[in-house]
Amino acid sequence: MVHHRSRLAFLLCINLIATPLTAVAQTSPGTTTREPEVLERNVRAELGFLASDAMQGRGSATNYERLAAEYIGSMFRQFGLEPGGDTDASNAPGFVQRVALETGRFVSTPVVTAGSKSWQYGKDFLVTGIRVPRLGGELQIVEGEAPLTKGSVALIRLPETADLQQQQARVRAARASQAAAVVLLESDRARRQREAGARLPAVAARLVGEQVTQSVPVFSFSKEAFNELAGLGNGMRFEFAAEMQADPTAATWNVIGILRGSDPNGETIMLSAHLDHLGLNEAGTGDTIFNGADDDASGCVAVLEMARALSSGKRPRRTIYFICFGSEERGGYGARYFIDHSPVPLEKIVADITFEMLGRPDAKVSANTLWLTGYERSTLGPELARQGARLVADPHPEQNFFQRSDNYTLALRGVVAHTVSSFGLHTDYHRVTDDLSKVDFQFMTRSIESMIAPVRWLANSTFRPAWLPGQQPVRN
Image (cartoon, rainbow, N blue to C red; front, side):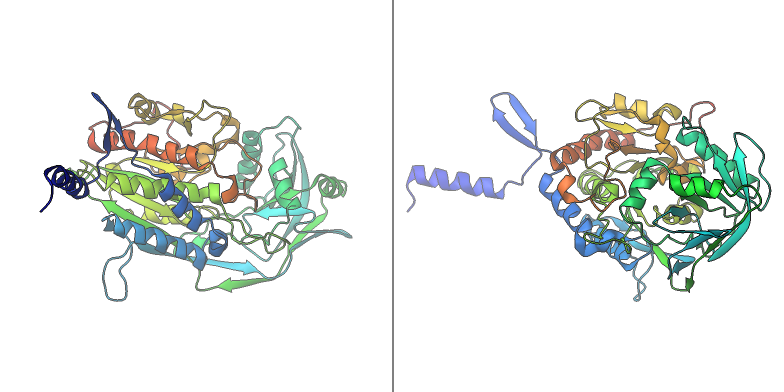
């Protein structure tokens, strides 16, 4: 027989064990505190896997990118989300979506020659946007706003005070003029990448069936090599050459989970990130893995934790698509495919919030604060801030971040789409040192937690964000 006092204690213990944990805990008479919905141990576990050496840098369109997608899909399944990917061999719906690509890979180090001189990839220059193993054209040295000649290789001299936007404007002008290629003096970021040991350049891919557009590769030359090339003068023949192999099995991978809302009109919001990174530094020594802990395993973890929290409560009014896109680093192919084959009419997508680089605080904003790219372009950011989101305008407008994430692909199609970030321009960007040791897990956990209530509000409200006059980006 149990003593009365012992029996009372026993019953109390049974009651405590049987009572489910809630988000609210009593701290003192008349006060309560809410248990956070995002736990640091979950953030550490998810980021620890995605940014581990075992994932080999989650290279765009590699099996490691697919493995990341499968992992995230398995988590979506645990959260009870509806699968939005391809069917499997048994015709059951899955979470992973295969996106076929047409591409190749370089199997030798590219070289540029002009006259009797030659320059080696990685040592003297980098190149982006290349699709062919060989190209050539007559060198045209362009000063200021001088017009470009069709088929030329435009060596563009920009003033030292030129910013990123001016450089991008000149590159766009060269492409519009159908130049064969553009040569620029390298940026500080490109110099750091080259000095760290640049891997062989990625071959610009295209979606299977996608119309081929004019491809104008951009060569980024070191200062010494740039001056040597410019010293050869106009009319010198510029040649790029390397060996390339086609890859008929190329594909990138998206992962899609759906929390179906109650709204009969099918209004939808999207929470997204990109799951790929740069893979391996094939030309490097020592640490050769681009772990991409901040860029953008941190964004994937944000999507995972948003899915965990939002799927655990009452079904929202609006449907929520949780998506991690593939191949953002190589041209946004995953996002482009998704929006071209959207399962939701574009006019029903109320907003997209992309999460990118949340692993460290940005000293340019207040503590425990995130920023939103294109904050001044639409009503989304200010309204989320009014609902408690610790969001401010992007403090780095000169970096043009609004156009540098998958949100821009959606924005060009009319969707109000922005990126949430805290990237403070740290020097580990696109380097092998972007690893787990640099992540501020407390900050990252609090940051994700801070977005849940505002996003939950957006998912249940009738508020529909809109572009401000003249601020919606337009496709060329």
